[in-house]
Length: 166
Figure 1: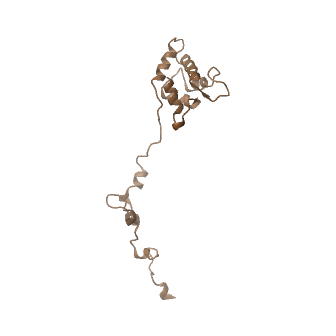
Figure 2 (figure 1 turned 60 degrees about the horizontal axis):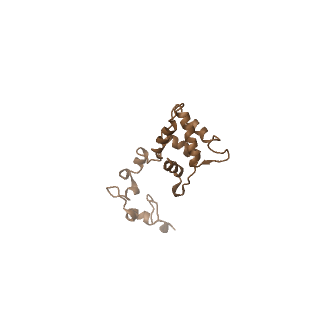
Figure 3 (figure 1 turned 60 degrees about the vertical axis):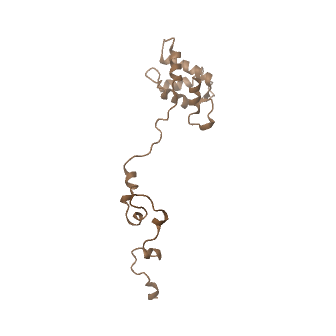
């Protein structure tokens, strides 16, 4: 059970995970290990974490000894009148580990597919990709229009007429 406690303490903290658990990680433990039901709700877990039997009012995190006291209180709430409730809950906790549910996933479909489909590109953008959709690199950025390479706008009709009129 101590390994599970440490894994939840360090979840999301990277390499510097401490052996102290805050309220959000305690609630995550209850959610991820599916300890919540009609008898033990998320509100009950929050209240149990903040009880004085678990930790002093001024503390914000609990150690493993305080965690065991909180588990005992959770067992009394989840299994009322059951003498083996604490051991049942400890077995459930010992078998679990933190999960990364709801993590950000890549968007599939819709506008992103249409915007990144190189076969639908037009104009000068079309010249930057070959038939397979692979970019041509610097060759695809080369100026194809003589007017544009001289510094004129593509549709300009009076190229090289400035010197003649002045």
